[in-house]
Length: 165
Image 1 (cartoon, rainbow, N blue to C red):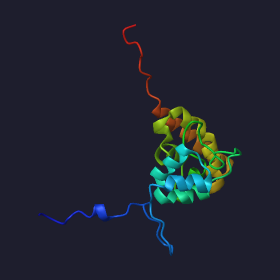
Image 2 (spheres, rainbow, N blue to C red):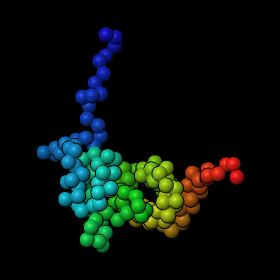
Image 3 (tube, rainbow, N blue to C red):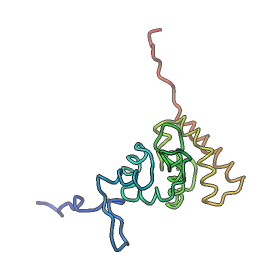
Image 4 (cartoon, one colour):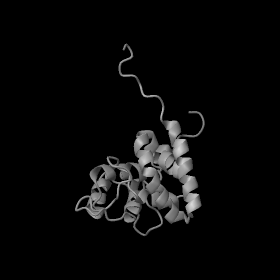
């Protein structure tokens, strides 16, 4: 054998195990069930959170706000029909996301999934980030304008359904 043997199979990925506690929580396929039972978030949201954050999804959900509904009772959606919730923005700010554009494109990837949903979520994401990061009105306006400008780059030509017509 040449070189050093690969050890990646033995490494825990970020979110795979919560360290720094007396009783570490390891990732489990039942994490999504825990999230529904403990936080009352929707099924699509729990699978999104578990796949995106691993056991850190528990930390994300702990920041969630009541939805005002009986179910899902927590987790206010950023965009209707998508699993992303507002507390992900707060969590993203804790992890040094500093622009609305980055939050919508790189952090949540909503711009890659549905540009219209990302554009509609941009004002609320701006409000949430402003509250977390202490932006004034001028910075909020600058962030929103920059996000709109850069998100416009995602909207390419619409394919022609009938190229022979």
